[in-house]
Image 1: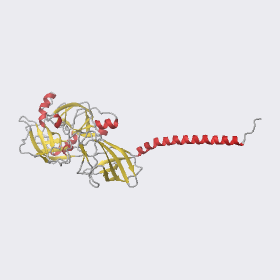
Image 2: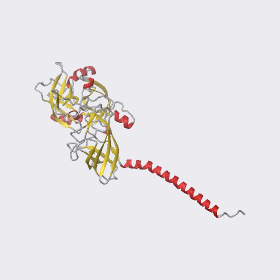
Image 3: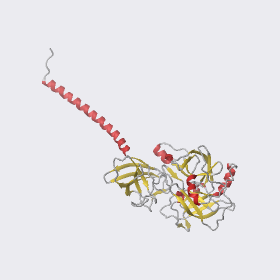
Image 4: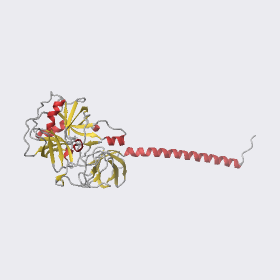
Length: 405
């Protein structure tokens, strides 16, 4: 018969059992802590998922990252990082109460919070000047409080119509480069300072011209430059009609030296399909690439744009800053769109881990036709049976370089 355990043995075993239980409890707590640390950020992110906001810049480059969102009973604080994708640029916002100021809407488009203040970014008309390629600016927008349980919000820059303005990831191709705090139209050494450029095309023989709205937005003066048999001709123009939502503007030549054209060699067409060959003639980066028009070709890749935007089509036609507002022609030489934007490769590479390959967009002609109801279209296609080379020789004379001051 085994001997009975002594009191000390019993106490030792009890202590050992307690220690083992404590160790097990500590390990369990450690695992729970790790699990919580892993899951909580995911849960928090799921509740605060947002879409990229629109930030006004001189080039309208959408290189944005939402760093964090802090929701309290009093405020909604949004920390944003802007990455400059050009060699120079500027960034700004508008004061609380201004119709162009940022606001927050829910996923259904309902306005739910107003801008209270902005930190590290000046209010308009002052601008934060960015002078280096890939420069990073961190700034903060403070809004009124929102429901902490809301799962998705949009941060929107308002406009005069109190509508949201979106161009996710896109780059507006106006070729603008900021040049300090000088106001637009200012004369330097007796010469007007040019602040932007783009492309346009003749709509009718009376001198109406189509382009993108963002090309001429906020311009004090606008000039168009055409090649001709007599040499370069420059005319002053004014904005006749504008559709900011669809990024379209119609200009009118107001110059006594302009003479009514004899004919227009192309027409507007909404007959197009995926796989169709298309081309454009424009003035990309004229300060670098020169003021001779450039021809680029490609195909229609898709009948919708970013996030299934039906106002645009995706094209493989290579376009650069300055091509904005150019006509997109089909193989018959008729206009099927207006070249507008390109997917931002800098943003995609930095935040998505890949570089988009030649992804570009054009506004469909259906949206241009809405504006042209008050403009007589007298074009007649005379180039449809010509080679691309011969089409380009004729059409280029009706494509203009737009300069803004």
